[in-house]
Image 1 (cartoon, rainbow, N blue to C red):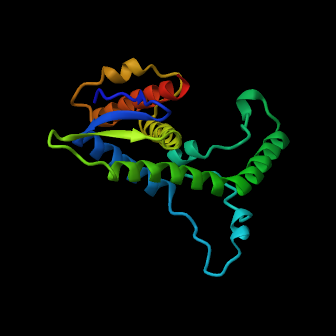
Image 2: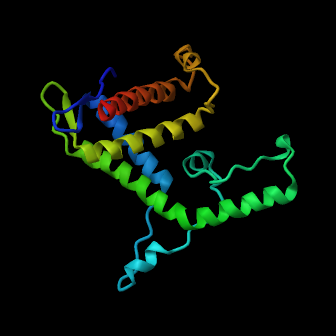
Amino acid sequence: MAGQFEALPGGGAAVALDEVEISILRSLAVQLLELIGPGDEPAEGADPLAALFAEGPSEPPSDPALARLFPDAYARPGAERGAKKTEEEELRALSAEFRRFTENELRARKRDDVLAVVRSLDALTVTGEGGAVLKLTAEDSLHWLGALNDLRLTIGTRLQVTDDDETGDLYRLPDSDPRKPMVMAYLWLGALQETLVETLTA
């Protein structure tokens, strides 16, 4: 999986993918869509503006991966920093209020990013050599960047990767380790994300 994004003249990016890579990307994207969940379609005849002000959940998701995708807006210091109970309660209340009015919109944006990935992959025509060149507009590149980031966050959470972990340790996993396929996907997505960022900032 050595494909790397390259900048296109006039904006956008392109990457060569083989059939296996296309299949893996689409499968991961669909799984992420299922994790994020379906959007709430407004009822027929309902005021479309009402959906903009609909309240979302106030508590963080119980699934660790979703909690990483939709974190609390205000960190909770906890006992290790000597935070007082009243301070923790205030932060919890602030986070709940922020989440109530922003999570639905954030979920919709993340869903749109992943849907853009699925649609662009479905639009590819695989050649007789078993691959295709994915060409993205500047707008689609931003959708892909968001989706790639969310995929890595999700997989990293499942692998229990922390900010302090060295990715070199992941490279050294034996082939017999059941985490190896997920690790390879995590590292590959990181390379795609990095090269896509480079095309957007060049």
